Length: 149
Length: 133
Image (cartoon, rainbow over all chains, first blue to last red; front, side, top):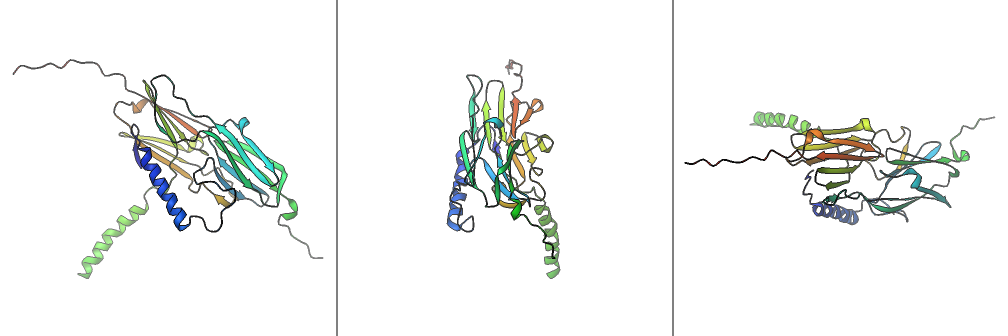
């Protein structure tokens, strides 16, 4: 997709995006019922969730944030990530803005944690614009070998 | 007739293979493009991209941004839910002639790429002589 730098018809692309979403709505993009806290596709930040045998890993793709200003909270098994990203102000008086697709403003995302998540052992780190929240799983639910007596 | 058909198919086959070798799927990153008197500033969201994974190419008047983000996830991770499904970003722009592609400055910080594309130094003003016929 080649877009001229000086005349990006942003409206055209957003129309395609809207069309794609409508198709998703009609023919079902996601099988089964959605989460009660799910957000519209394309919301900031994009989130990936996975697990390893010992932890639950959440990756929020939130570039350009001050790590100190990102709020990560856990309350009754729901993890929320919130913060704010400032818009880039054009420098100089005669500056022109052609394309403004990057997210600006405050954001909030909530993820309900599985039952075996241990809310007392959570670590969060921020690297290359990705916030990684690692929640330990309770040892009682981790796979273990039972010796036969 | 059968042989010609077979030959035609044979010819088509490598073409199809070439088509499958086309660039793999990639996410189109969001950008901001701002212009001032001296040049253009482009900001692109590339979360998860380290400096060594980013590739910027200028070919003719095309500027291409390509980056991978394969090292973000641990290898033993079992995905449960994913909004970022393709581990690659790609986007291309056509530069206009007054921009100086040789002096582009790039800066990647916290997953945001900042490109500064300066404008060419003003061409020497020149007078066009009108020849008498």
